[in-house]
Amino acid sequence: MYKLICLICSEQHIDLQYNNDVDTRVSVFRASQQDSEQQPVAHSFLNLPSVAASRRSWQRVLSLDGEDGELILQGFLRLRSLEKATKGSEMAAERLPGGVVMRRSQNANLNSESEDYHRHLSVAVGGTFDHLHAGHKLLLSMTALVLDSGPTNESCLTVGITGDELLKNKKYRDELEDFVQRQRLIQDFVLGFLELLSPYHILERSFNLEPSGSQNREIHNILKSGVVIKYVEIFDPCGPTITEESITALVLSGETRQGGQVVNDKRREKGWVPLEIFEVDVLDAREGDGDRTDNNFESKISSTDIRRRLHQKLSDRSI
Image 1 (spheres, one colour):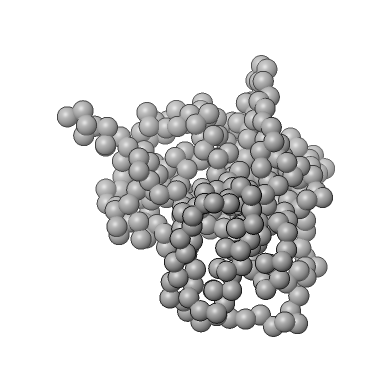
Image 2: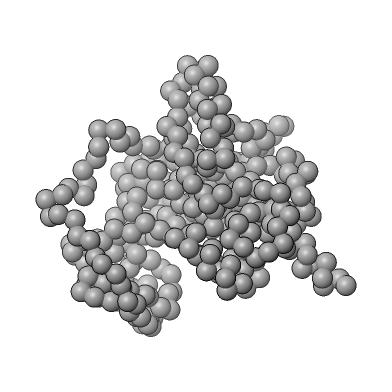
């Protein structure tokens, strides 16, 4: 979906990162006929009651035409009308042509778990996250889905953010966002994504851990559901994964696969259990050389290219 969005925006010359941009967010949704009778719960996938309970003031909802699409749409609109926070708000419904609907057998158990499935109460992800783009959003979304954030769990999501000192030699460094900017954008996206999973995933309080000496900056979000989100400044490829034994899973991209091996080697040296690695195809969203001049798909998911275009715009204005 993110790739399709990037392709469409490339063809239509729509910016995804700055100025009058389109803030696109894709989530995994699971609906069943029983959803319209359920209450919002914390889960790894979106469900109808949780989406309907969102405090967001949406103006339009799109649905697939047909019996199945209409069933979900009417269930959503009914649940939405019952929410106190959204009563009185108008929402237009638009039906789009749909394709073939595939039904799962009623005998299939949607809640069954394979023997190889492991629950993770502490998951980590890391990166520069400069000018948050579709590739970053995909990586952060998948990290949130790996986390077991159920209502009875005390879970923790750790986001390692590269410190400013390590970014001095990046191309178009004047257009780089500093740590504070990057952390705020990541926080906004992660909180928004989790809040759609459950209305209980809302920010209850936030605080900064004051750095002392060589200690890195660290911000903690405490959610009403009990989930803790840590944003940690990192100055090496491993970050908290080799200082916090409680972390059990690491989400990374194909380009940083070797880093995951390094992390687990260091954990083994400490006598710790290696992390389960989840590799995500982040649409080839690496830094790149930043020398692209066209408005192609790759330019939408390269932080370097975003900085190049920002630099060019500022240069054009000064002429």
